[in-house]
Image (spheres, helix red, strand yellow):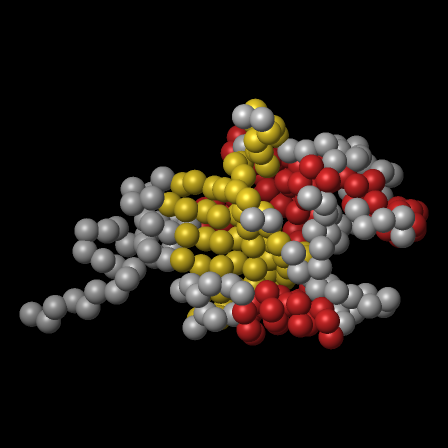
Length: 255
C-alpha cells in the first residue's frame, strides 16, 4: 500500500483543522494621499516597505475599503510581501468610510487642520452618540469592526492545522481606533484599564500605513487566544465586549 504523503498541515497525531493556527489580522491605514485623496508616490513606497517588512508565512490575503487609495495600498503591500501564496484582494464594506453627513465632513476637515489627532479625537469623543442623524457613531463603527474580527476568529477553526497566515485589512484613520477604545485592555501601574480616554493614551491616531495587529492563535487542542500588537507593545482584549459588539452589529444589520 502506498504511504500517504504528509504535509505540515496533516502531521501524524494532529486533527486536520483548527489546531496550532495563527491568523495575523492586520488593520492598516492607507498610505500618504494627495489633496485629491489619491495615493502619492510616497504612499506607494510606504505600502511596499510595509509589505517587505512582513515575515514569511504560509499565505497572505487582502481585504480593503472600496476607496481606491486603500485598494492600491493593500495591493502594493501584497505585491512586495515575501509570501509564496498571495490570494486575491476582496472588498469589505466594514472597512469603508461609513455614512457621514456633509456638515460632519466639513467640520471634520476643519478639525484636521488644527492638529494631527484633532479630527479623530473629536469624532471618537461622541462615543455611542451620533454627531448628527446622518453620521454613524464611533460605537457603531466598533460594532462593525468587532463583527469582522469575530469572523476571523471563526476562520481559525476552518484552516488546516499548523497554518500561519496574514490578513491585510486596508482602512482609514479613526476606524480601528474606535474598536480599540472599546476592547483594548492595557496596564498602568499594575492596574488593568479598558480602552482609553484620549488618543494620546495609546500614542495617537494611526499614521499613514501604520497598523494594529490582532493575533489569533489556537492551541494543539483548539483553544483560542487573541492579543493586540500595537506600536511595539502587546495588549489584552476584553473578549466579552468583543462578542457583545459583534452580536449587536449582526442584530442591527439583520434584514
